[in-house]
Amino acid sequence: MPVPVLLVTGFLGAGKTTVVNHLLAHADGRRIAAVVNDFGAINIDAELIAGASDGVVSLANGCICCSLEGDLLRTLATLLRRDPKPDYIVIETSGVADPADIVRNLMDPVILREAPLETVLCVIDAGTPPSALDDALLRSQLRVADIVALSKLDLADAAAGTRMREAIRAQRVPAVVVEANHGEIPSALLFPANDGRASTPREVGPKRPAEERFETLSWTSDKPVSLPGLQQAISRLAPKLARAKGLFETVEQPGRMMVFQFAAGRATLAPGEAPPQGVPRTRIVFIAELGVLSKAELDGIMEGCVAGG
Ligand SMILES: Nc1nc2c(ncn2[C@@H]2O[C@H](COP(=O)(O)OP(=O)(O)OP(=O)(O)O)[C@@H](O)[C@H]2O)c(=O)[nH]1
Image 1 (cartoon, helix red, strand yellow):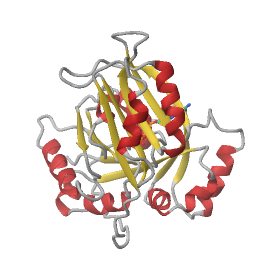
Image 2 (spheres, protein in one colour; image 1 turned 180 degrees about the vertical axis):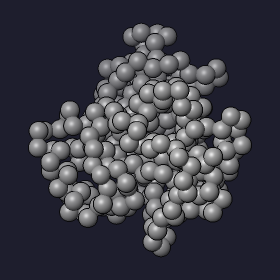
Image 3 (tube, helix red, strand yellow; image 1 turned 135 degrees about the vertical axis):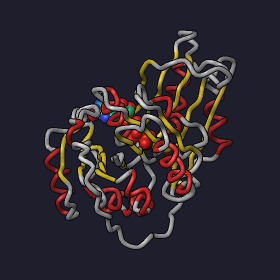
């Protein structure tokens, strides 16, 4: 029986991991394996994905649309050899991946037969300015989608949903548009009944040259972080950041881990899980446009928020 694949794409911070987590939390007994791709050296996403019933495989330190394409196919082959096999496989791409390249890789005849790409979901922040859809990367993420999920409608103004639907229609995207409140999308929509029928190959056009637009900088520390210090550091860094996320322990509440998220100019904190043994207690990944933020500048700013820093 082939194992259907769901590919989740969308820009940095759009809400992909939130959708994947919701799906895994509502697996209803289905064995779902998740493959996540963080293009930084520290793999935060794998830790932020809770409860994959059939495990989370992380492809870190490279992008699956370019440097890790062979790894993706090998990972899928390994998942297919599991006994029992997963019922479904979810692949979450990094926010800077061009999904057209991944779709092209998934058209490999063996993979297509054994792990057919059933659905491509593109998550888009409803508060994204419509003009951002003209960006080549966002256009490519939208073009390959069967379903577009609008996230963060709770944060956007009342007209944002309609505005975004119109902007998507203007891009002539044939996808169905749905709303995803904190990642909530009916799993029947993402995983149609696995009836074993053959998947049809998809056409995605010629390969585009890889475009290096973003870089990831990591900052780790064994010391806890002061919350007001972190707030100050993030407000200094914010104008240069496309995305940041991380896990850390606070000076104010020793032993309590927090998850930090920065996306679309908004920072949030939530309780987190203790890291595995031997891993630094504070790990934050920063994504910025190439050349905008140096490691020395980042370290200088971040050192100010650790105890004694
Ligand atoms: N208020 C609100 N926040 C959301 C919603 N969906 C996602 N978020 C938040 O947006 C931030 C980014 O969400 P993620 O799911 O990590 O985004 P992502 O697309 O996986 O991010 P990348 O790491 O760039 O791939 C997190 O703080 C989420 O909690 C939503 O519908 N409403």
